[in-house]
Image (cartoon, rainbow, N blue to C red; front, side, top):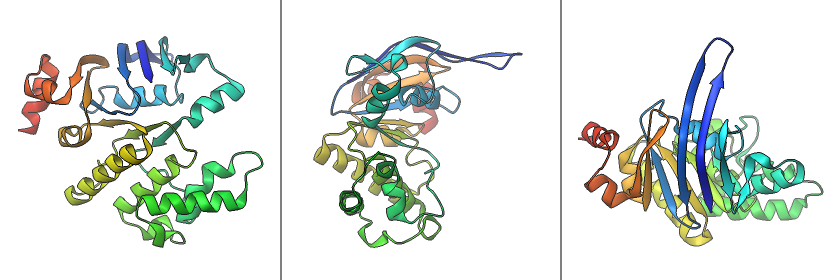
Length: 246
């Protein structure tokens, strides 16, 4: 379970102070598909970076199964990070590595890894995402949807409990988006992985998420069941998002 408690993140560059997140609190239960939605600059990606421990909160806490991530270090931090796989917006693939090598990369960072075990895991993951025939291809030879599938396979390599997805469909056409969301639902169902999707696309949240949080200007505007929030929005920000879609 992810429990975000009164999280505030402030960036200082010496001459200015930017409050990216302010007093955000929400909980994501094990096994659910949870959406975080907001317009560009709302603070969504900063929240993901705090969840993945790429940034530390200025104040507040991010608890993973009761452990404060910002308080961990060394082996305990590495263990916590293994519980989370991250799918970045720009794929972040290694262009000089094959598809199989990209998926294997996080496994090869572990001490004393077993080559055969890594090869078997890579084959399993490429079959899961429908790219078993692309193991020897390079990222430049793939479509955007295929690159995203490789990124998802790599994020799942260490058998994480949580998959954090930053705008996973923003660069995809509608048909590829539909296939990508079906894949994420399949992963959630087959592997029991908790999935947190950060997006500005209402259609993505409606298609796959059970609950949603609306972020506006760094603050939590509204949270609840997708059907309730989008049918009877309590916040002006949610109404603004719905109006933009229409």
